[in-house]
Amino acid sequence: MLGYVKIDKGELRVREYEIYTGYYCGICKSIGKRYGQLPRMALSYDAAFLAVLLASLSDDADAPVQEHCVAHPFVQKKTVIRNRAVDYAGDVMLILAWYKLADDVRDDGKVYAKATMKLLKRIFRKLSRRYPALCDGLETHLAGLSALENERCANMDMVAEEFSKIMELIFTAGFDHLYAEGESTQDAEGCAQSADSESRGGEVPDLFGIPDDPRQLFAGIGYHMGKWIYLIDAADDIEENIASGTYNPLLYRFSYDAGTETPEEFRLRIEPELRFNLYQYLAVLSEHVNSLDIRKNKGIIDNVVYLGLNRKTEEIISRVEKDKQI
Image (cartoon, rainbow, N blue to C red):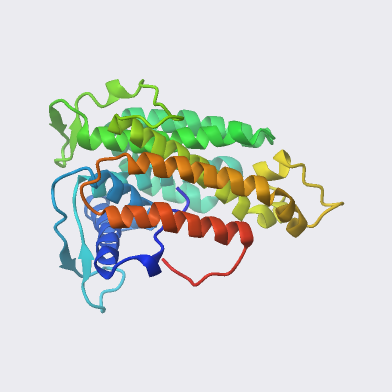
């Protein structure tokens, strides 16, 4: 996840904003408590939405507490929320950070990435034992994504599919971790994990209809969010990728030619199709979210899905400067 999934702060109630940031701070605290201070750098607000959405199916009320922040020790205490969804979101951020570092080492041989991987090696081993099916699936789809990007694949849907499957895995593994039926087993740190979660990994979700099963709803949410994230990231990076010569599926899909058009002209040419696809993904995503039995924090979820993602879409498509927000 790349930092695009955020709230529209101006449209969120004060109490809801406090809860939302409480989830974010809870993830940060969870990572620090279980893995140390360095891994906290992997955190993004995407993780907060993942945790809020996963926790929304639970009847357990949020229990905010006020704690000092290690990054801001001299300011007032911050709201912190802790639950299993928060712990899972933190684990996912570290797993994705590991694979991002591995990609940096493989592609560019970056020294900082090699050094950081050595520091995180023990943590990743623990996480890969806790989530073997998730890590195996992520490796498979990340390898597929890397291969297509290295080939300069012009089939944008094919490339985006691999990233969509990554997001689908993250959301369904989270659902299994929290809600799958069966007796739970405890790891050494007391984190519960469903005994039958891996056996459910072979289900084929209904991605084009709106299913009734909550697990399939989470699969559809992850899948279409993955489509949106991959495309919005490509749109955001057009100028940077043109300047550096690095792969961008939009440049190949729409045959960008530096000799006949400027980056701005290219943006204008592809905008209608780009806009249609992005809003189509968001429309299906919202239908899946709306079909969930959400029991708490619906205002936060609706804010992200109906306002935050739409606002980010317009910011990147139109390149209009907006007020800075978290």
